[in-house]
Length: 130
Image (cartoon, rainbow, N blue to C red; front, side, top):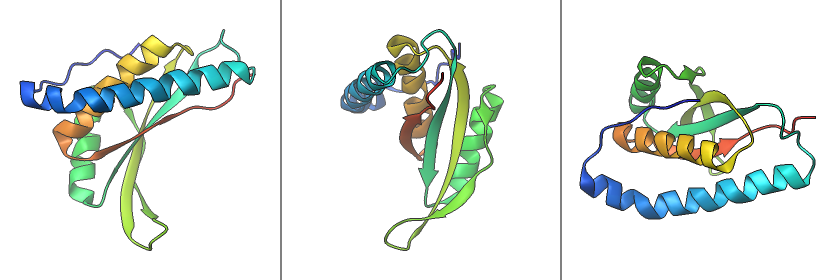
């Protein structure tokens, strides 16, 4: 299980409370949907946390910070949005049981990392496991 603490000040913590609530709801719904669809709760799932920024240098620094914290970081990529603008993105991958508390606690760490590094946290996803 990934356990990392990102130092933050009180103001940043307060700002993120609403964001945490939204991601908690997202996590509850996604895990419930996966279970309802029959994803195997007995196996670990690959959880991919998505990060993005229009500024490659900021994104690269976030990836380096995550790597230094011992996280498994995927290579940054450039993507084109629907409006034609460019964005850079990378994923942090973990292996976790399909458990709301574990995934949500990990998500909070990822949100804190994104805020600290001034990049966007774009959520998490996983794959159906048989």
